[in-house]
Length: 574
Image 1: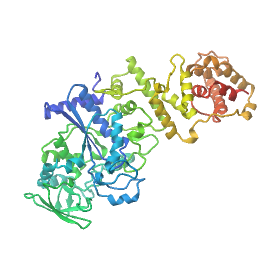
Image 2: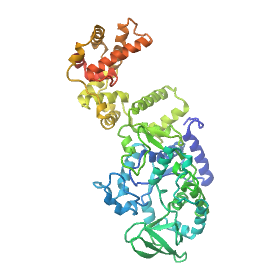
Image 3: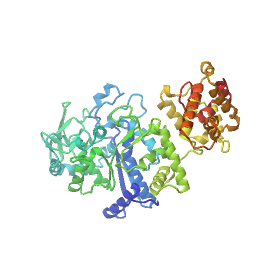
Image 4: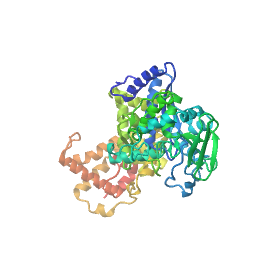
């Protein structure tokens, strides 16, 4: 891809990763990694954890290198709390592995983790993200990590010494960021993000009986409310007690119901998978955090190296607070893909450097966002976009595997939204209006405008409040028509007289802006003047009141097309 590395962050990281991989393990596939915890809805902030390495891995793949993007599903993490909207009876499962917790009521999936993974898996497929998923439940329970677990236990003194370098009075070792270095919103977001990850609220293995980096799940209650009380390095005999009252001694070399504490688990995986590139969130960036501590443990204990990768900033939603998977109602990638096409969502992550925060629009801003996206597409087609914008566009519309599906006849999103708003989605009415938009390039079927049309319709029906929806008047406003002055009557006459000759989106735009020019004796190509702008605003407000009973509404040319010439004449004739 002919992008300027200084302007294009993906190319820059790809250069660094390729060089680092060649230094570490020449000739082997390059490993990029992400980690996701299905402790609740996997939201749009979590998606940055995936999109950052995906875009870099895809660039590496485009260059002809063998690369794998792994996503570790942290489905063996403990179930921490009952999210909003879930029956409080699920509190009995707190402390169990996520794969041992029943799925929410009515779910078709076998457990909690699979329920929340399913939506993300489908979204990643739509987004064209190629990856290899790794279930941590399967890895631990199959014994794949047994040697690593035994090694960590043998080296527990060394691990404890590393952790002790960062332990200070008042710190719990949870990896929470230093609040003074973040603004109020970022600090709150960091805390919330940590609650949905393996870094959250988990002890580092320190206990009254000594330091042990392994946490067994109780064989009776299946919870991790356990304390290791003894361990023998030679026999691998491990004894633990549980708050439920159970006491047991097991052979750790054979035990499959437990896991390393997070600050040891993460660096163990770096070494096990040979990860070269993995980003981390703000919640992992402070001294004593999982990423900082892991960078020392991975080398001193597991003989591996810490991945390179950026710290990424949080993702917000227009008009909403920072997202948290621990709370109900946070938008997920599936929610976003119901109102925007996959290339647009990819673009939002591709165009911003990982350390730049940004917001995803679920409000009216989405219309401006789509305008910006369409403008960029035209610039790229004309060769007028700069290198960084061209690169981001290319990464958005396709991957190394090929282009993503697109809308065959892409009309402006705001136009489609206005039409489905006015027609309430009626297919016959919608098609009639779409055909009239541009007689030189008419829409033959609604399928030509999909999936963008469906996204716009879903946005209107789910994100626009009822009081903001457009309702065309069924009968003329006789009172208002009776109060019109001569100037207003003449303006309406000119509009109605020109309907037939201007019945297209472009023609009606010329007409509605041209009537006030005619009334002021100005030519059609005149530049706007303060007097003309006032006259146009007054005329537009009159039309809105007569058509929809408000002083604002969808763009008038679109509204007129949607209402239809017969109803327009009925509503606007004094």
